[in-house]
Structures are given as structure tokens and as C-alpha cells.
Amino acid sequence: MTDPHSDSPDDAAAKVLTALKDLGIEHQVMDCDPELADTALFCEHYGIPPEVSANVIIAVGKSDPRQYAACVLLATTRLDVNKYVRKKMGVKKCSFASAQETKALTGMEIGGVTALGLPASLSLWVDSKVMRCDYIILGGGSRSIKIKISPAVFKLTPNTEVIEGLALEAR
Figure 1 (cartoon, rainbow, N blue to C red):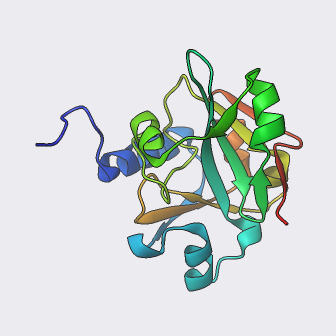
Figure 2: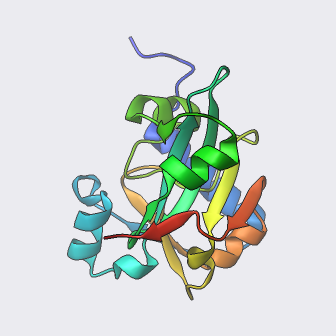
């Protein structure tokens, strides 16, 4: 028996598409084979440059109560979770949320997590490098769609802060 309070991936994608409509910003929905939704596979299969592929990672501060932030960064970078994110949260320990925590918090599965349609209480931190792109490819709320959109969308999303140094160049 399924939990009647848990969102299905289709519900999450519907929330994302509603959020996009409400924001009134131009975008393109791209179909994606769910088996190819993970960033490296997606970019390779669909010919998307990693420099415009934006990942959304949920970071968790191991405090009581636990703190969460959705972090947006380019696929060519890595989240500075141990230094920058930990300090910004003001916690001693910080890590990536598990797939289960991410799903419980956002209603979205890894590979489809996006910065749109998130709970209003969740902070959204965007690495400044994302804002320098002409366009980005974001998850669409499920593993079966991606969204091509201007990073200007982050000027319209709630609880959003653009941060210099949130992500480091990948080694």
C-alpha cells in the first residue's frame, strides 16, 4: 500500500510545471529517458554541455533540528559542503541529504530534483557561476523531463540567494 501523503514523481513534475507557469518565464520542457536522467549520462546522450547542466543538491546540516538547503550548481563544479555550506548553516557537520531525505523533503527523486516548486520553507542557494550562463538545463521534478530555462528564473524564486563560492571547480 502506498502512502497517500507522498507525492509521485508525476505530482512533483506537475508542481514544477505549475510553478513555471506562475512565474511566467520562458522555458522549454525536454523529454528525458528516466534511465538517462543522471547528469553525466544525460549530457552525453542528449549532447548537452555540462557547463550549462545545473544540478540541484539538497544539503543537510546535522544539527537539532536538522537544517536543509537546496543548492544549485553547474555540473562542472562541486558543492563546497564541508566548508562553505557548513559555515553558512552554522553547524559543525554537514553533508548531502540521502535520496530518501531528498524525496521526503521535495517529493522528487535524485536525477529529477529541481529548484522549482520546492517547499516554501526551504532555502534555495544558487552558485553565482550558474547566473553567468545564457541558459541552463534543470531537472523537471521527475526523471522523465528536464527544463531549459534562463538562470534569470532565480530572480523570481522564493527564498533564493545567489552565492559567490558556493561551488568549487571540479578536479
